[in-house]
Amino acid sequence: MPPSRPDLRALFLGFSSVGLSGFGGVLPFARRMLVEERRWMSAEEFNAQLGLCQFLPGPNVINLAVVVGKRYQGLAGAVVAPLGLLAGPFAIVLLLAMLYDRYGSLPLAQSMLRGIAAVGCGLLFAMAWRMGGALKHKRLFLPFTALTALAIAGLRWPMPSVMLGGLLLSGLLAYWKLGQK
Amino acid sequence: MSLAIELFLEFALLSCVAFGGATALLPEMHRVVVENHHWLDDATFTHLYAIAQAAPGPNVLVVTLIGWEIAGLAGALAATLAMCLPMSILIYLLIDRWEGFAGARWQKAISLGVAPLAVGLIFSGATLIAQAAGFGWAAWGLVMLTVVANLRLKLHPLWFIAAGAGLGLLGMV
Image (cartoon, each protein chain N blue to C red):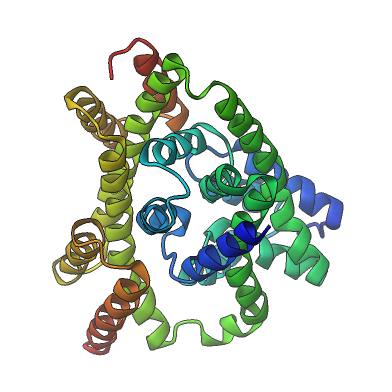
């Protein structure tokens, strides 16, 4: 079955559905929409293009929307697809923010938010744990994880310098490791 | 308006080192927004994180909320654009050339090398939320429970959020 070629409207709506359905990370929803439901790309294309989106910093899903939008509708598509991804959730989040401004100081709201924050914190630790488990060459690279955490969370060093310095060291180590074979 | 511009510049710079997305930026955003500029206090920062967790959409929306609390609609727009724009432009320019580099050794090396740092950032973000929220033993218990349950069970994250909200409302956290 040949892939359909989405117009701007389809791009906007397709990515809107992704943005609105995702909780705690929308990447899996983006994959389902792009590869399985609308077949705008094959599974292989998805993996290849996601590569660059994850390679660069910043929100991966937004980067992916730019790539898909550009591919089908050029510059206009590259603007419309991420807009679709963000517009709906943006409106919802602002609505919640207005409710927070109005009712956030109530004790009940504070207790509820504390409960959600605790769970959200747990979800972050679990995500870090899972990502750590999936690292390649763990013994070689886990020390970099520990050092990053120590520098950022423990010593409160500024993130840009930690990332640039860390990436230089672990990137060189990775380059050396990849050359050994 | 100048506040929105300041936000834009701060966040645009941060987005360029945000390996692991907006979540990885939590500690640095906290430093900029709470410690350096005193635009928000600790409690508000954790509340905004909680609201973003409970809302649908990409993780980047926590930045939208922070922008809104600091400078209203202009702040929300400025912060969101700042997070998305720099890398979007770069990727727009690079994507066609990227296929040609596919599989190059330097490229694999950066992907391999950046992953452990990203894990460290997410871990730091979680630590920071716990610190800023000033969790007591009950909240820490819930954190641990969430970690174990999330790693063991295949449950939609929304169930966890709902459980957290419920336990909070009951005054158990």
